[in-house]
Image 1: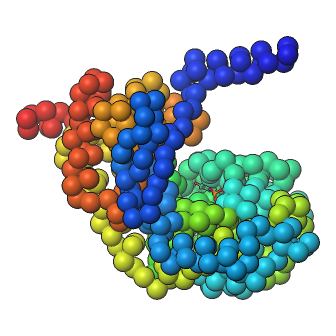
Image 2 (image 1 turned 120 degrees about the vertical axis):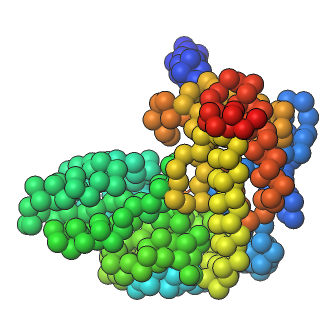
Length: 409
Ligand SMILES: *Cc1c(COP(=O)(O)O)cnc(C)c1O
């Protein structure tokens, strides 16, 4: 097959650029997370996972598991069709009520993933607004960029979290022009947050609609897990809140929440919603139980924040280049694609620690990093072991440590 060569070239190019991805073959088992079995080249080994987005371990919560298994036994596995054709099951309807309530909105609409909710949500909203100009944060997730692109609308990218730049663009567009501001609350590679209230102030002043991705914050922040906007008391000021059911909620799926008429319009116009099989009832049921649990319980959030803070402190004291982060995410700078991959490999093979390397294009070249996500199930001893393993790896790969750590030795 002569076409095969194109694909061989494509793979070779990735390998040349150190961008070829290798997945770790892992087997999590309930009750042992963050420990897992790694199916590696030398057989099966016990490892500790340090980069899961099941941030709170809800994917292993007994109530959530029982909701999924029990519902599958009662209602079967698949949804049986698109929402229009036999796929609107009662658990999906209940899930949408739960989500609307979580964000203090009139309605919510569930999609098969957070990716799809952004891609199809943003593109559909923007296309329904006449002559819409989209203002998009420079560090927005790929799913949002694809949503903006697919809308076919004019777009301008504002410098990351730069209110002055955003205001300039809003002002230049003029009061008459319809505008949609799309941004995130937690940027998950750096762990910084956006100035939501100030962005809403600008949106009010210049008559723009707002769309926020709270994917890395739902379940995690706010008294009921409504996200950073709930924590900051500004949820009611946002027009559309988007989130995932696949990260802190530990299941799968995505959604948007907002005014009933807006959600209704998206429901009837979004191709990525209309022409695809609905979420299975068991998934919806498990997600609803997880959301309900985290609305009432701070235990997981508090333990997670504690372990994240402790991890930052212990790694920084050891002299590791922990990047500044305001949230639960702990990025450690490597700054070189090859060394980042080598560090990840060494941690897995020598130390039984799994942290996937984060390289370009997920982050800019020169800022390659290990992105660590401590959870409530990581023990203090695991954190200390992580620090020791990272130091060994840093020394073995000749990566820079903070000078005062050398002096302390
Ligand atoms: C992971 C992610 C998504 C996609 O959510 P999925 O449910 O995993 O498809 C959207 N936005 C951001 C910022 C993400 O990190």
